Length: 98
Image (cartoon, rainbow, N blue to C red; front, side, top):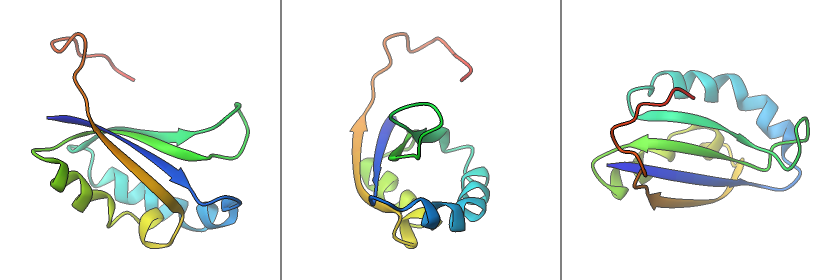
């Protein structure tokens, strides 16, 4: 199943993000088979991130919850909130590189 995860960052946490970015990217890289797409969300190009969006392939919502709680951004307090949604692609057979 596919899921979309939307994270909200703690306000004014750019320094915290920068401190743990390398560990976070390494963590994501180790989970490429599960986390299909990941990236920060910004109000404007070049502005500080306000959160992130992931597309995850997993068997259950519970599995998704277990996944992100070991992310260095989560364990070090960058994330203020998280929303998990089941995602149904409009064109399920289409493989689109992002």
